Length: 178
Image 1 (cartoon, one colour):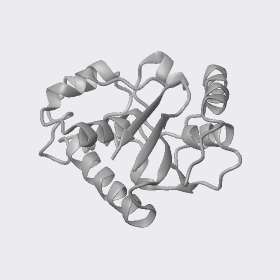
Image 2: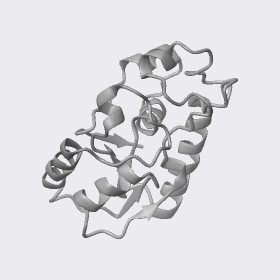
Image 3: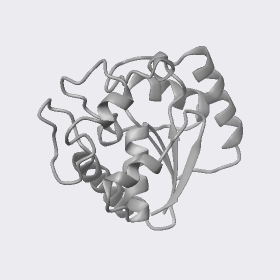
């Protein structure tokens, strides 16, 4: 299956470096422009299905980049649940115990770890394959956390230290063969 993964356009939290988690933050003007550019980049691509996180910023991105598609909103590709860790920068969070855990599902503050994210992404991908088949072309409009989980699955990453190598910018499309 060919999976196009788009991270939502820029938000104010992206600019400030504060992780927003499951907030209902919208796109900045730059984020809207990024989505308009993405619309042009994928204009000739035909998707068998489009799935979108339920967060406002991903829904706005979807409305701009694929207005002609009826998309499916799926909670399993929503942003990471931060528990009580709201208001931290990504650099601060990466230093917290269990933040990148591949074995524990929650930090002591209730934040979702990679183990939990990977589990829900694997469930989502298995369902996609079962419903659409191996030759499907699917678009996901989601978040860096979900894209990182997909990258881990697609590349067989075993060590959470490798997560530091991953980056998914707001104006970037990543393509995976799952």
